[in-house]
Image (cartoon, rainbow, N blue to C red; front, side):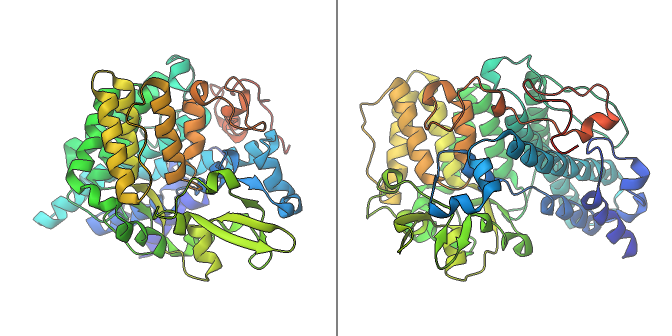
Length: 461
C-alpha cells in the first residue's frame, strides 16, 4: 500500500517546471502499478487533479455583473476586469495542473503493457484504462490550447502548446496550433479504437470521448464530422434526457441520463463556486444581469435552477446565479461538478450544422427547437439562417450553460461574430485572450516562448 500512496501522491506534489519533472522524483516505484486496480487508483489521482476553472471563466465572460459588494473583493474585481495580474494568477494555476494530469496519463500508458490481466474482466479494465488515459490527455490538451493559444481561424501555424508523450525530460518547443489539434484528434481516435465498456460518468467513457472529438472537430472547422459525431450521441441517448424531470437531477447531486462526465470529488466540490459568495445572508459579489435573467420564461425548467431571486436593503432585487451556488445557499452538499452534459452535444451539432451549408441550417433549427421544447422554452424563429442563426444558437447556449464557464470559449472562438459583448471584455485582437505561459516553464526549457504582449518574467518576482 505504501508503494501506491507514494506513486499517487507524486503528481500532486510537483513544483517547478510542470513539463519536465525528473522521472525518479515523480514516479519512484514503477512496480507499484502492477494490477488493473493499481491502474484505476493512478488514473483517479489524475481526475482529482483537474483544475476547477469553470467559475473563473464565467467571471471573465459576460455571465455576471458586479453587485455593491464586488469592491470588497479586489482580486475577483481584477479578474472580472481582465487585469493582467489576475490572468497571470489563473495561468500559474491552470497550466501546471493540466500538465500534472498529463504526466499521470503518460505514466499509466507506459505501465499498462506490464499490468497483469488474468481474466476477461481485467482485460476489459485495462482497455478502459487505456482509452481513459488517451481521452484524459486529449481533454487537458484541448483546455490548454483554448486558453493559451490563438484560435485556429487565426492561423494553424501559430504557436500552440507543448506536446508531452513520455516521462523523459525533453526541452520541447511549443507545437503549432494545427499540430496540437492533430495530436488531440489522434489521442481520441486511439481511445475510440481501443474501446471502452464503462458507462459511469465519473470516468471518461466512450460517450465522453465522442463528445470531446466532436467539439475538437467543430473547433477545427470540420463541421460535417462534428455534426455527425455529436448527433450520434443525441440518437443514442434521446431527447427525453432534456425533460424537466431529468434536468433538475444534476443540480440535486443525483446522477442522471444527461450527464456524460462529472467531476466526482465531494471534498473538492464543496468549495466550487464559493468565490462568488460575499455572505449567504447579505448577497454575492456578482449577479446575473436583469436582461439575461428575463430571458428564461416561467415554463423553462432551467429557470428554477439557474436564477436565484434575492432581495436585501443593500442590494435591492437581484438575480443571483443558481446551480451550485443555489445548493450552497440551501446548505446542501455539492457532490460533483458537471463537466460534460448531453446538451453540449446538442449545441455542438447545432453549431456545426449551422455552418455546414446545404440542409445543415434547417437541421440545426429542428434539433434546437426540439431541445427547447423539452426544456419548456420558447422556440427559435424557423426562418433564421447564416450569422443570425449562429448567433441565436450561441445565445441559447449561453442560457443553457450560464455560470458554467462555457461562454468564455465561445466569446473567444466566435469573437468576430459576437464582438465585444460588454465594454470590459477585450477586443478580438487583444493579447489577453492568450494567457501568459508561467515563468517556471522557462527555468527548465530554453525552447519555451511567451505569448505576444506578455513579459517573459513573472509578475511576482
